[in-house]
Image (cartoon, rainbow, N blue to C red):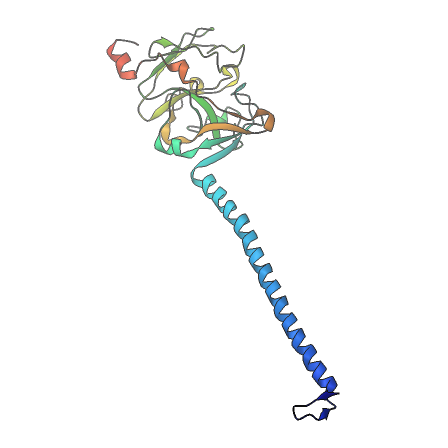
Length: 247
């Protein structure tokens, strides 16, 4: 029993207790609602920390960096079979490509019909030896490559035991193009082999999709990739070389 407001007993004790219980249940329900709300915030936070980074990676991947797998030996020992490289799309889009850079480029003129696919698609990867205006030449049989008449020492990146070129060649790089060679010259179908492709074996700058920055996988091969600019330090500007009578 319970007292009413006028002091009389009431027999509605069970009802009152039920009401009180219902009230407490309602309060508990509100508390549970808050827990759900808190859980919702947590889920949003999780989504925030997962989705945003993924979107950032996608944007970086699409507009700033490229990733490629190396399935051939043409760039050994700089790049091994199975190495994965990351490239800069920005450097390629700006045409900011220098001698010594390792570039990934679209197959310019059916090169892959006579050589192994080098990045798992219709792309190849080579080192730039000559830029627009340069005259790149070699007498073959172990003789060094010359750029604008100056011999370059490529031992810092050539595969040990590989000659600069087994055969002679002499090519002038025209505007908007690049002359490329593999670091494993004995196993690289590069500019030397495609002089009859309609562009004298040169790679259009517009076909370059990335400048290689680093090997990111496997962990044992992780490293930054160098362009060995010191190799070309004594090479004169193409215009200067032309003015001095260099051939």
